[in-house]
Structure formats: C-alpha cells, structure tokens
Image 1 (spheres, rainbow, N blue to C red):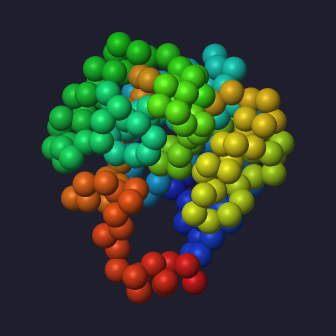
Image 2 (image 1 turned 135 degrees about the horizontal axis):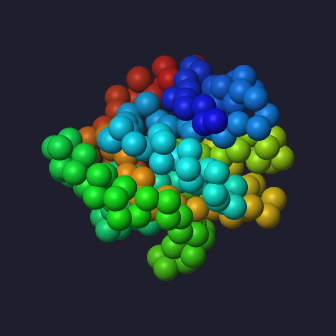
Length: 192
C-alpha cells in the first residue's frame, strides 16, 4: 500500500515528512508531494501501486510541468501554460503510452551534466529505504540530500515517465528556482 502525504511542519519540512513516514507500517511505500501539486487522472494512484509492485528502484519521481531538473519536466521544458485541461490531456496521453515505465534518473541527469537527483514536488519510496538512510534531514535541500543518501546506499533513482502531475511552483515566475516572488517577511515567518 502507498501512503500519500503533503506534509507540513512549521519551520522544519524534514520533521514533517519524518513524522508522517514514522506513522505508517514498515512494509509500506510513501508518496510525498508538495502542497501545490495535484494528480490529474483517476488512474494515477492505481498506476503508482502497480509500479511499486514491479520496480527495483529505491526512490521514484515523475514528470511534471514546473520543477527543477529538466529531466522531470515534459519534453524538458518549463511550462507557463496554466490551462488545467491541457495538463489533464497530457497526463492521460502519457499514462496510456508509458503506463509502468521508469527511466534511470542518474542516466537522464547525465545528459545535462547533473547528478540525476529527484526533487520534493514528488518522491515515492519504500519505508525500508527511508529507514536505511536515516530519513529526511535539513530544510531547503532535504530532497537532494535524501536522493544522494539513497544513491550512496546502493539504490537506484527513477522517473516514472507515464505519471505526470501538475505543479503550480511559483506561477507567473519565468524561472521559479532563481526568482522568488515571495515577500521576505513571509519567508522569515515560515522559517520560525
């Protein structure tokens, strides 16, 4: 079974994730998503169940419209299209064409010179892997560090290419990972 969470713990995202994961059975899979994401088809959670039953990857990501890195974005491009029906149609097409397919994230990352890490808008992993690597740590880079420790422990990172979710990720900002459109006082408040 997969337990789905969009964890929040004021001032410490890792603590929020770890508390959620601790609460589930040891043989479970966990799907962590950012609060500004959403599944787009009624089949996607069923699809993820099937993928987890067949995969040998220790940590999975998926495709989305707005994120970093490029290999987790459809066609490697940041989308500025906010028409949800466009994204639903795309999710249905990818689901149909690539249902259970998973590509190696490190291989995908090597094409653009990156480490092939998976980022926090969507992370799917078995609890046993989380336990093995000591859970999530840190605040801003908790997702990269978790990915690195999963790799170091000898597990593979993968991207489920038939799963496409919507990620709002700073809508209206052209380069969301470099330009914050957040008020500085709000950032200070979130860190407390």
